[in-house]
Image (cartoon, rainbow, N blue to C red):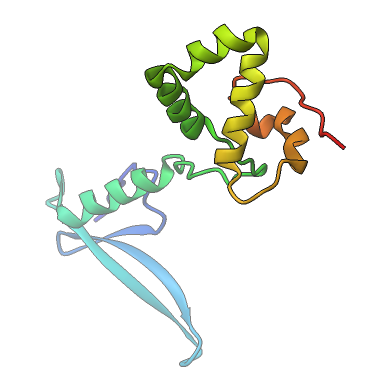
Length: 154
């Protein structure tokens, strides 16, 4: 019997024997030095109607899953920065709640932001002296209140 199954996922030859339909995949057996065949039963054929079985549908869904584009995973970071947005947010709320921000603005005017930034630096960079305070103008401390370059006192 001849049977033609139009399915893109079938890579082997479709064979029909005694009403049973198989996908025939030939291979080379290196141990025996001869060709062999692997068959997968995919359904029945009565001469007019092809009735697929579960293996047929499993192979079809496997092919569809493989043909879908692969999902992209996480992208590795190429630039490593140390940002303090969460810490400065917390310090901002503490300063507002305790009234330190208003008191500094009342006492020092525009310099209050620089003083607050210096206090943040001492809290965030625990254990460091004030010598590297000039780095506060860098991107790593972009969320500090002063946001301007503070020259190191030498």
